Amino acid sequence: MPDLDGQRFLVQRAQGPYVWDDHGRRYVDTALGFGATFLGHSAPEVIEATKAALERGSMPAYAHALEEEAAASLAAHTGDLSKVVFVNSGSEAVHLACRLARAVTGRGRIAKMAAGYDGWFDDVAFGNAGSREAEMRTNTRPVKDETMLLRFNDFGDVDLLFAECNDIAAVILEPMMANAGCIPAADGYLAHVAAVARRHGAIVIMDEVLMGFRLHPGLASHHLGVKPDLATVGKAIGNGIAVAALIGTPEIMAAFEDQRVSRAGTYNGNPVACAAVKSSMALVDKVDYGAIAARGDTLRAEIVKGFAYSGIETCTSGYGAVFTLWRGAQPPASYREAVGIVDPAFTVDLHLELRRAGVMSMATTYGRYYLSASHDQEALDLCAGAFREAAGRMAGSSQRV
Image (cartoon, rainbow, N blue to C red):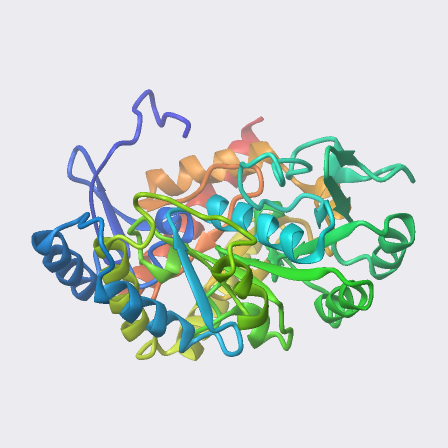
């Protein structure tokens, strides 16, 4: 994170839609633990549940009822993906999903979206946004070890992929290319990939570590009409407590029970994490998702309007609950388009000016803005005002140059 006027930013505490720095200044937070605290920072019910679990014993080393209760509460929101294995991070969940797919299919290759982020394990730590491979500018498909890249929102490239290779164990999909700037899937694209993959005997893994429980109380893929075989979830399921999970159909997840796939982890399914999941699942059922989407869409429109007033053309991509701001009139529909219009200097300048105006944001090249269930009208008004102020300062700066 860049310094502002020679001062670095250190968080002192976080509550609801706000964070406070080590000088006591309050900011509206739009980073939200990189999307983890969907319910808002330090949701009281989650804090109380985790405190109670901690007091009873954070690591008993034996089976405990809370793990079964947490798994049941999660599975109640994920339809036919009714089996749950808890891990500690989204990267672990994706890694476990890849191992499971290989064991079930007897194949070795994993295909992932170019410019997608699916964790840091070797299986998928390839072709992330910002890398040369992610642009896929030649007809030679990027491959590293057992990982292959697929162009997001390119219907024809799916057929080419399976024509080129008959050893694909699984395709990893994301409901939206968040780390490439909140690029939504084109109409029918996710369903098309899933259908082609299944026709060729590959398993469909939906990486929902970021998007799960953000559009409705469940998987974004189900909300968008797609049924994966496996899904990875994290972030929102524990509202800031370190926990993730692999969920899947009973038929595929049976490979764990019959020992075709081994799994282990001292902290997997620990009581504190399970308490966070169970309490978070109870809370998401009370969230007015429609209201969050509407508030977010209103904020997006206010941001674009504020920049237009200052003579800067902008647009947004994504959803009301998570979106990216772009220079120009049209948001990208593919990563190649995103590379062509992204403006890293604009992103950093905006981050600094927002900070000056009392809003914290991600300063990364393809940064995004999150809204939580706790972003009330006061927080949203402060946010809109900060964007207007930032737009004015940035316009004035460019005129002076």
